[in-house]
Image 1 (spheres, rainbow, N blue to C red):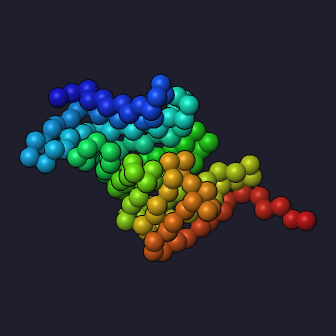
Image 2: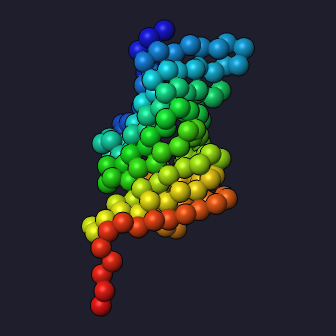
Image 3: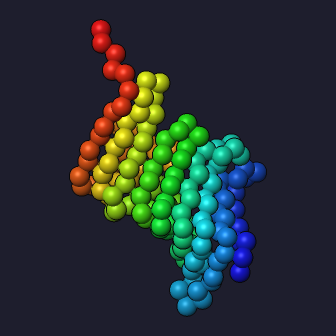
Length: 148
């Protein structure tokens, strides 16, 4: 089928919306496989975080989504996560990957680029206390470092 859409609501507010350019339902696995994935998360019914990827799969029950192929996640405040594969775990409300991931966090003077393998991040792509790196980790800051 073409033009797939799935919306999760809580009360009167949209929580997230999953769009696919096309989809195929795999009955024996109770999953839907999507091409051209866009997953938008909302806060008070306004977009907060947008995830895109080449392909994706809605796991049984529709709560978890796995996306692969040039996965790009961007928040409205400019944080960006790039990785080859990412899983959204609805029960924990986290993004997780065992692949290499690059997280770019802007600030008023520049940006920090963190690279690691196996990260777990909140829907807003976390903060320093919300980033869990399972293996290797590298951080590079580009910007002005104030001196006092």
